[in-house]
Image (cartoon, rainbow, N blue to C red; front, side, top):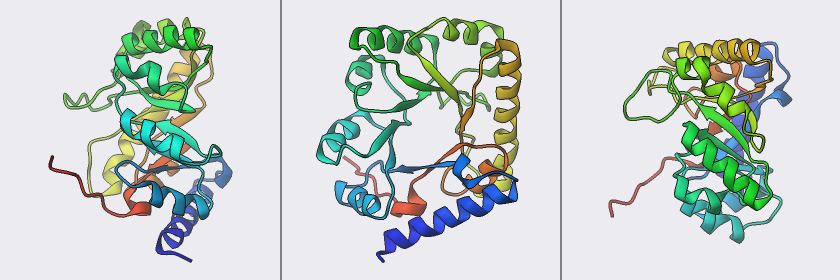
Amino acid sequence: MSDLAERLQAIRERLHTASERSGREPSSVELLAVSKTFPIEAIREAMEAGQLLFGENKVQEVLAKVPALPSKLRWHLIGHLQSNKVRKILPLVDAVHSVDSLDLARDIQRIGGELGLFPKVYLEVNLAAESTKYGFKPNDLREGALDALYEMDRLYIQGLMCIPPFDPMPEKTRPYFATLRTLRDELEKRGGASLPKLSMGMSHDFEVAIEEGATIVRVGSALFGERTYSKA
Protein backbone atom coordinates (compact mmCIF):
# COMPACT_ATOMS: atom_id res chain seq x y z
CA MET A 1 0.00 0.00 0.00
CA SER A 2 1.36 3.42 -0.97
CA ASP A 3 1.82 6.25 1.53
CA LEU A 4 -1.10 8.11 -0.01
CA ALA A 5 -3.34 5.03 0.23
CA GLU A 6 -2.38 4.64 3.89
CA ARG A 7 -3.23 8.29 4.56
CA LEU A 8 -6.56 7.87 2.80
CA GLN A 9 -7.37 4.82 4.90
CA ALA A 10 -6.44 6.68 8.08
CA ILE A 11 -8.64 9.64 7.14
CA ARG A 12 -11.57 7.35 6.43
CA GLU A 13 -11.10 5.68 9.80
CA ARG A 14 -11.10 9.07 11.53
CA LEU A 15 -14.22 10.06 9.58
CA HIS A 16 -15.90 6.80 10.60
CA THR A 17 -15.00 7.29 14.28
CA ALA A 18 -16.12 10.94 14.35
CA SER A 19 -19.44 9.99 12.75
CA GLU A 20 -20.11 7.23 15.25
CA ARG A 21 -19.05 9.47 18.12
CA SER A 22 -21.75 11.95 17.10
CA GLY A 23 -24.38 9.25 16.65
CA ARG A 24 -24.36 9.35 12.86
CA GLU A 25 -23.90 6.80 10.13
CA PRO A 26 -20.45 7.16 8.53
CA SER A 27 -22.14 6.92 5.13
CA SER A 28 -23.85 10.25 5.88
CA VAL A 29 -20.52 12.08 5.47
CA GLU A 30 -18.71 12.40 2.13
CA LEU A 31 -14.96 12.83 1.86
CA LEU A 32 -14.04 15.46 -0.73
CA ALA A 33 -10.34 15.10 -1.61
CA VAL A 34 -9.04 18.59 -2.32
CA SER A 35 -6.49 18.14 -5.07
CA LYS A 36 -5.70 21.78 -5.80
CA THR A 37 -2.07 22.30 -6.91
CA PHE A 38 -1.42 18.55 -6.91
CA PRO A 39 -0.56 16.78 -10.17
CA ILE A 40 -2.71 14.36 -12.10
CA GLU A 41 -0.47 11.50 -10.94
CA ALA A 42 -1.43 12.12 -7.31
CA ILE A 43 -5.12 12.12 -8.20
CA ARG A 44 -4.68 8.83 -10.07
CA GLU A 45 -3.02 7.34 -7.02
CA ALA A 46 -5.91 8.41 -4.82
CA MET A 47 -8.36 7.06 -7.37
CA GLU A 48 -6.62 3.69 -7.38
CA ALA A 49 -7.03 3.66 -3.59
CA GLY A 50 -10.77 4.12 -4.02
CA GLN A 51 -11.29 7.88 -3.83
CA LEU A 52 -13.63 9.15 -6.57
CA LEU A 53 -14.74 12.60 -5.35
CA PHE A 54 -12.30 15.50 -5.80
CA GLY A 55 -12.42 19.24 -5.23
CA GLU A 56 -10.56 22.05 -6.94
CA ASN A 57 -10.25 25.73 -6.11
CA LYS A 58 -9.44 27.12 -9.53
CA VAL A 59 -11.34 26.80 -12.77
CA GLN A 60 -8.15 26.44 -14.79
CA GLU A 61 -7.14 23.35 -12.81
CA VAL A 62 -10.53 21.77 -13.42
CA LEU A 63 -10.20 22.49 -17.15
CA ALA A 64 -6.79 20.80 -17.20
CA LYS A 65 -7.51 17.80 -14.98
CA VAL A 66 -11.02 16.63 -15.82
CA PRO A 67 -10.34 15.74 -19.47
CA ALA A 68 -7.12 13.93 -18.51
CA LEU A 69 -8.70 11.62 -15.94
CA PRO A 70 -11.34 8.87 -16.06
CA SER A 71 -14.95 9.96 -16.37
CA LYS A 72 -15.93 7.97 -13.27
CA LEU A 73 -14.41 10.70 -11.09
CA ARG A 74 -16.70 13.37 -9.65
CA TRP A 75 -15.58 16.96 -9.30
CA HIS A 76 -16.67 19.86 -7.11
CA LEU A 77 -15.52 23.46 -7.38
CA ILE A 78 -14.83 24.81 -3.90
CA GLY A 79 -13.02 28.08 -4.65
CA HIS A 80 -14.38 31.47 -5.61
CA LEU A 81 -16.10 31.45 -8.99
CA GLN A 82 -15.97 34.50 -11.23
CA SER A 83 -19.03 35.12 -13.35
CA ASN A 84 -17.03 35.08 -16.58
CA LYS A 85 -15.99 31.47 -15.89
CA VAL A 86 -19.42 30.02 -15.10
CA ARG A 87 -20.00 28.78 -18.64
CA LYS A 88 -16.69 26.89 -18.65
CA ILE A 89 -17.13 25.19 -15.29
CA LEU A 90 -20.78 24.10 -15.15
CA PRO A 91 -20.49 21.19 -17.61
CA LEU A 92 -17.47 19.78 -15.76
CA VAL A 93 -18.43 19.73 -12.07
CA ASP A 94 -21.15 18.03 -10.07
CA ALA A 95 -21.46 20.91 -7.62
CA VAL A 96 -20.26 24.43 -6.85
CA HIS A 97 -19.63 25.04 -3.15
CA SER A 98 -18.96 28.75 -3.43
CA VAL A 99 -22.11 30.55 -4.52
CA ASP A 100 -21.47 33.72 -2.56
CA SER A 101 -23.80 36.35 -4.04
CA LEU A 102 -27.12 36.79 -5.78
CA ASP A 103 -25.33 38.10 -8.86
CA LEU A 104 -23.32 34.89 -9.21
CA ALA A 105 -26.42 32.79 -8.57
CA ARG A 106 -28.27 34.65 -11.32
CA ASP A 107 -25.43 34.00 -13.75
CA ILE A 108 -25.48 30.28 -12.88
CA GLN A 109 -29.26 30.25 -13.29
CA ARG A 110 -29.09 31.94 -16.71
CA ILE A 111 -26.18 29.93 -18.08
CA GLY A 112 -27.54 26.70 -16.64
CA GLY A 113 -30.68 27.34 -18.65
CA GLU A 114 -28.71 28.05 -21.81
CA LEU A 115 -26.73 24.82 -21.37
CA GLY A 116 -29.68 22.70 -20.31
CA LEU A 117 -28.18 22.09 -16.87
CA PHE A 118 -29.55 22.14 -13.32
CA PRO A 119 -26.43 22.99 -11.28
CA LYS A 120 -26.06 21.75 -7.72
CA VAL A 121 -24.85 24.57 -5.49
CA TYR A 122 -23.95 25.33 -1.90
CA LEU A 123 -24.41 28.82 -0.47
CA GLU A 124 -21.17 30.13 1.00
CA VAL A 125 -21.72 31.96 4.29
CA ASN A 126 -19.20 34.41 5.72
CA LEU A 127 -19.89 33.76 9.40
CA ALA A 128 -17.06 35.87 10.78
CA ALA A 129 -17.67 38.83 8.44
CA GLU A 130 -14.07 38.58 7.23
CA SER A 131 -13.24 41.19 4.61
CA THR A 132 -10.82 38.79 2.91
CA LYS A 133 -13.49 36.14 2.31
CA TYR A 134 -16.53 35.92 0.11
CA GLY A 135 -19.97 34.78 1.15
CA PHE A 136 -23.47 35.76 2.15
CA LYS A 137 -23.96 37.40 5.50
CA PRO A 138 -26.35 35.34 7.64
CA ASN A 139 -28.78 38.25 7.86
CA ASP A 140 -28.80 38.61 4.07
CA LEU A 141 -30.10 35.06 3.81
CA ARG A 142 -32.64 35.70 6.55
CA GLU A 143 -33.88 38.95 5.02
CA GLY A 144 -34.65 38.09 1.43
CA ALA A 145 -31.64 36.62 -0.33
CA LEU A 146 -32.76 33.03 0.28
CA ASP A 147 -36.23 33.81 -1.06
CA ALA A 148 -34.65 35.21 -4.22
CA LEU A 149 -32.47 32.10 -4.55
CA TYR A 150 -35.46 29.79 -4.22
CA GLU A 151 -37.04 31.56 -7.21
CA MET A 152 -34.13 30.43 -9.43
CA ASP A 153 -35.60 27.22 -10.78
CA ARG A 154 -32.40 25.89 -12.38
CA LEU A 155 -30.50 25.79 -9.09
CA TYR A 156 -30.47 22.71 -6.88
CA ILE A 157 -29.50 24.30 -3.58
CA GLN A 158 -27.78 21.55 -1.61
CA GLY A 159 -27.15 23.46 1.60
CA LEU A 160 -24.59 25.78 3.15
CA MET A 161 -20.79 26.05 3.14
CA CYS A 162 -18.38 27.94 5.39
CA ILE A 163 -14.66 28.51 5.82
CA PRO A 164 -14.07 29.62 9.42
CA PRO A 165 -11.07 31.75 10.41
CA PHE A 166 -8.10 29.43 10.62
CA ASP A 167 -7.05 28.28 14.07
CA PRO A 168 -4.61 25.42 14.70
CA MET A 169 -6.80 24.32 17.60
CA PRO A 170 -9.79 22.49 16.08
CA GLU A 171 -11.99 23.21 19.07
CA LYS A 172 -11.72 26.93 18.30
CA THR A 173 -13.59 26.35 15.03
CA ARG A 174 -16.41 24.36 16.62
CA PRO A 175 -18.59 27.44 17.32
CA TYR A 176 -18.54 28.35 13.63
CA PHE A 177 -19.62 24.88 12.57
CA ALA A 178 -22.38 24.88 15.17
CA THR A 179 -23.50 28.31 14.00
CA LEU A 180 -23.73 27.16 10.38
CA ARG A 181 -25.82 24.16 11.40
CA THR A 182 -28.11 26.36 13.49
CA LEU A 183 -28.46 28.84 10.63
CA ARG A 184 -29.33 26.02 8.26
CA ASP A 185 -32.02 24.76 10.62
CA GLU A 186 -33.45 28.26 10.97
CA LEU A 187 -33.50 28.88 7.21
CA GLU A 188 -35.23 25.56 6.58
CA LYS A 189 -38.01 26.59 8.96
CA ARG A 190 -38.29 30.05 7.40
CA GLY A 191 -38.18 28.94 3.79
CA GLY A 192 -39.91 25.61 4.04
CA ALA A 193 -37.38 23.97 1.72
CA SER A 194 -34.79 21.41 2.68
CA LEU A 195 -31.11 22.39 2.93
CA PRO A 196 -29.78 18.94 3.79
CA LYS A 197 -26.06 19.38 3.29
CA LEU A 198 -23.33 21.22 5.18
CA SER A 199 -19.92 21.62 3.53
CA MET A 200 -17.52 22.39 6.38
CA GLY A 201 -14.33 21.11 7.89
CA MET A 202 -10.84 20.72 6.43
CA SER A 203 -7.73 18.67 7.12
CA HIS A 204 -7.08 19.97 10.64
CA ASP A 205 -10.65 20.20 11.94
CA PHE A 206 -12.90 17.87 9.92
CA GLU A 207 -13.64 15.63 12.90
CA VAL A 208 -15.05 18.57 14.86
CA ALA A 209 -17.06 19.58 11.80
CA ILE A 210 -18.55 16.09 11.57
CA GLU A 211 -19.50 16.22 15.23
CA GLU A 212 -21.35 19.47 14.48
CA GLY A 213 -23.23 18.11 11.47
CA ALA A 214 -20.98 18.28 8.39
CA THR A 215 -22.19 16.11 5.52
CA ILE A 216 -19.14 16.73 3.32
CA VAL A 217 -15.61 17.51 4.52
CA ARG A 218 -12.91 19.05 2.34
CA VAL A 219 -9.59 17.31 3.04
CA GLY A 220 -6.44 18.14 1.09
CA SER A 221 -3.08 18.34 2.84
CA ALA A 222 -3.86 15.48 5.24
CA LEU A 223 -4.26 13.27 2.19
CA PHE A 224 -1.89 14.63 -0.44
CA GLY A 225 0.72 16.28 1.79
CA GLU A 226 1.72 19.88 2.25
CA ARG A 227 1.33 22.13 -0.76
CA THR A 228 4.10 24.09 -2.40
CA TYR A 229 2.94 27.22 -4.18
CA SER A 230 4.73 28.76 -7.12
CA LYS A 231 6.13 32.24 -6.54
CA ALA A 232 5.60 33.11 -10.19
